Length: 360
Image (cartoon, rainbow, N blue to C red; front, top):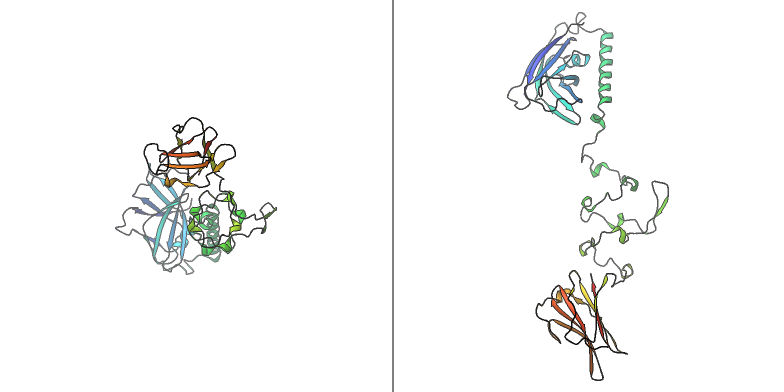
């Protein structure tokens, strides 16, 4: 077995009151380093725990050497940097080298505070007596390269992992994010800033594209299926941009039948109360005797239904009537506003009826 010697140093991960230091001899190839942690480290039993010694030599050159983590108990540890060409290269230049030891577990890392490696000059290093032969130097360089390459192969995240929120708008080329790269439902209002989507960013109706599966796609425009209900408000629409030909006309799309009352039971019978909660407007349809029909085309805003009070009949704050006078006989349909959330309807004569509809 080859000779070996280790320098020992203790570090604290919590307090940086002193700067620990070790003395080493320039160019030693059988020298290693043992670092003992004075602070507990949780979860040392993970199989992916590793360590790396990073050093900036006195001449400004930087390098690293792999270390092995040894447990000294449940949460205590030592890191052993064995003699190696990598470590020899770190102590190749006399002077004070700055060092940090990092322990990794997956994507997490904990680092020591800075400590010193005081490389003492070997007066014979570099001379015929003390220098490495060209063959030895070539071996050191090749080993260091291979070791670095092996470590990079084992830790691709060191050079390939993109940190969260690391890619900015400036890093993306124009048109870099294609349709095929966006999952259905991935773009929500939270991802789009207010006023961010301009009209020149919306594909025109009839524009043709080739999908990821190779099929041609013709843009049908933005229809109701793509819009969340009540998602477009006045603040999102520029004045004068929506023309009449872009609007569908269907005022009764949400028309609901609420109730009907047939006449013949007397004027005082207004029927059961009808719940109008949630309806924006009411539509009353009244029918009278043969040959006469009345359609109350007026829509009654719910905000008009505000007065509480007893049932009333005739022209009052709680009463709305549709009627027709034929031959001195009055035919009518009447909406009685019992309270702000319900109404009653009636039809007086046997040849009449009243029907109520609500619009959401």
